[in-house]
Each structure stands twice: as C-alpha cells, then as structure tokens.
Image (tube, rainbow, N blue to C red; front, side, top):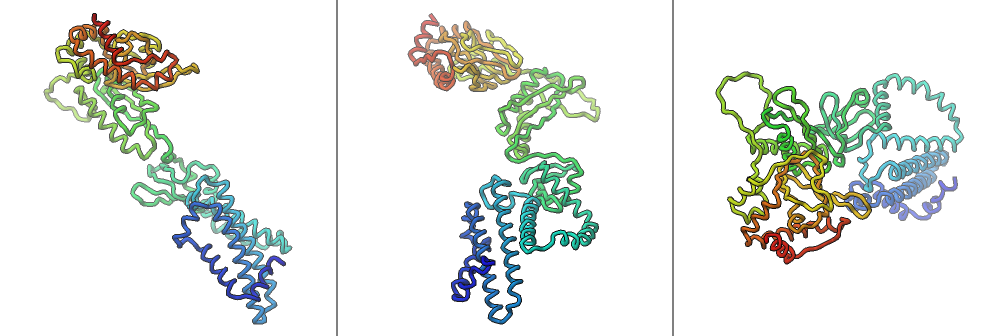
Length: 508
C-alpha cells in the first residue's frame, strides 16, 4: 500500500499546490466543452490517451490523500483502510478503462480522429466492460476475496434478472452476433425486408439505429434485425451496379436499339466508363422488345442523379431517330395513325460531325457519303492491328472502339476508348505508315468507312485543303504522344512540312 500513500507527506505539508494540480487535472479530464483542447484531442488521440492515464491516476491518488488527511484531522482514523481499498479499486478500474481506450485505438479502428462514433456503441461497451471486469477481478484477487463465494452469492440474483430480461438479453446477444459477423459497418446503408432503408448510425446493446432519407431515425431491435434478411447497399466507397429494363418497338432494329441505349449511357457523366455499360436484348418473344442496360455508379447515393440522367439521355437518343420507349398498353385504342419510320443517322449527317468536314462543301460531303459504306462489327473484332497500314478512315456511328498498344514488356496497354462521332485511320492512311495503335471493338460497333480513293479525289480537286488537313493530322499525332511512347513501334515523328509533302505526292 506504499504507492497509495505516496502523496500523504506532500498533502500534509502543502495545501494549495495539490489543489491547483487537482483543478488542472479536472479541467483536462472534463475537456469536452473546452474549444482550445478539442483540436489537440482530435489530432493526437494516442497522446491524449496516455495523458488521460497519467492524469486519472494522479487525480485519484491526490484525492485519496486529501480525503484521508481530512478524516485524520477529524479523528476518523478507523475508516482509513476502507479509503485505501476504495482508492485501489478506483485505480484499477481507471487503469482498465484507459487500457480499453488503447485497445480501441490500436486494434478496432483505422481512424485517426477521436470521434467516438466511429465504433458501434455495443462494441465499445463490450470492450470497456471486459476491461472493467478484469480490473474488478484484479481487485478481488489482491484483496484475497473468494471468487467462488462471490459467484454463489450472486448466482440466484443473476438468474432472476435473466428471467425478467429475456427480451432484452435476446437483443443484447443478437447485437453481439451482428458485431461479430459484421454484415455492415457504421455509415453504410441497408434495406430491410419491408423495403425501408437507412444509414447505420449506431448499434447499441438493445437496437440498431438507421438514419432514413427523411432524416428520421429507424430503431430496429437487434433480435428482429438478426431474424430477417436485409440488403447491404454499402457506403460511398463501394460501386453500385444496377440494371434497368427498357421496352422499345419491334420495328427498331435490335442492333440499332442496343447501340442507341449504349450511346445514351456513355453520354452520362455520372455513370462510370470503366467497366463499360452493357446492353443486352433479353426478351424478343413479345412486343415491344425488352432490353437490359447494366450500368455502374460510384456508389448507391449517386445512383439517383445518375439514373435520372440516364433516362433523359435514353429519351433524347431515341427521339433523334424517331423512336420512343414503348409503354405497357392496357387499353386498346382504335385510331388512324401515321406509320412510324425509324432510321439510324444518315452517313451525311455523321460526316458533318467530323473536324475535317469544316473545310468541305455540302456537295463534297454528299459525294463522300455516296462513296462510303456502312459496316457493322461485333464486340471483340480487331478493326486495325498494330503495325498495319490503314486503307480507309473509319467513323464511329454507334458503339465503343478500344485503342491499345503493345508495350516493350509484351503486354497490351489500353490507351483510350473512342465513341460515337470519333474516327481513326486518317494519319496512317495518308502518310502510308504503320499504325502504332490497335483498334478493337469493345462493343457492337457501326462504322462509316471512307475509302482511300474517295479522299484522294477530294484532295486532288481541292489543293487549298492541304494546309487544313496537315494541321489536323499534326494535332492528332501530338495528342497521341503518350501512346506512341508506350508502343514498341518505331517512334517516327512528323512535322507540318512532312504532311504537306506527303499530300502533294499522294495527289499527283
């Protein structure tokens, strides 16, 4: 017991210094309302826990010495041993509580702040209760009390309490089971069997609390939650990948319908482009046909805005070709209606979207459209191999084309993904050089293929276009700098003069 009497001589000799020390320690231990100390506690949790341990031990010893000194002055020396036992118990319980905090910081959390809400209340209470039980057991062992006798004396009372609290204990052990299984974490959203959903904000000994969309709190008893199935929608760091069914008239060619739905998904900036959206025809046995579009959002919450944007873009792309989403019809209407004509975008319209079309007249574009052909390729088809000299310009109408290079390590490196309105093959065709990129159809792709002779005739008739084409090709080569560096093909660079010289040779 010498440690418990450590500050007795100090208290007997001095009065005010110990009181000031106790006051300072009290301010530190009850610091939650002090703004100045909040930043220190939040930024240095482990340092704070160590100071807490030292502060609480000093405060208990000083207060114990004060109390014993005061009782001695009033002649109450017979309770001195009981005071020492109380000090010992307080020291052991306070030390156990501080070590529970250490365990919480070391093993149970990856957070660096001191916010106690990042662990469910049930887990924290079990952790603290376990350490306090060890502290109380240590006190019983030091004092020489019989643990067996303590069990026998409290057994009957414990049995009565357990019988009276069956439901509460059921919630407690269900909460413990949920904490051990860990089917969800704080901050994640779950959807219950009845369709209600919310963000998990706490799990205590009786219930799990969910914050609903209307900012109300759903309190679900742990036993009820453990009995039912629920869906974990996860948090902000988990990709959410739903699919939607869209019904389109059977008059629309299925390949065109799939290309339009994919184009609508690619227009949405709230939908992830890696992995690519997926469109499938899932039912063609009934009219209208049913298509599935599978997309990926950064998380569940972002799905709401992304879904709205997707439906808007589907409406626009179908409207552009004269189609529409076909609703389920429950009533039979008899009326005369015009026959719906659904056509894909014309070749002429696609050519007008290109940057090289700015320098061409409508007559020249129409002539190119007449001499061009429309091609359709299935997903996975190699359109142009690396090292191959292109013989045409391919303009993407629908779908996605993946560009990749073969690195020096012998692996394919994806460089870019080309979508509707973009084209490839111009530089390789005009300069008669091998392509350092491989072009592969990532999805079903529809192309407009402009033949080499078609473009040659335009450049022969319009020598004034040479400068414009040279500038366009130089810009495309400069934009491909990273891909050229990663490719195993020879790094051959061209200047504007090189392009002009080549076109002069090409059009002679």
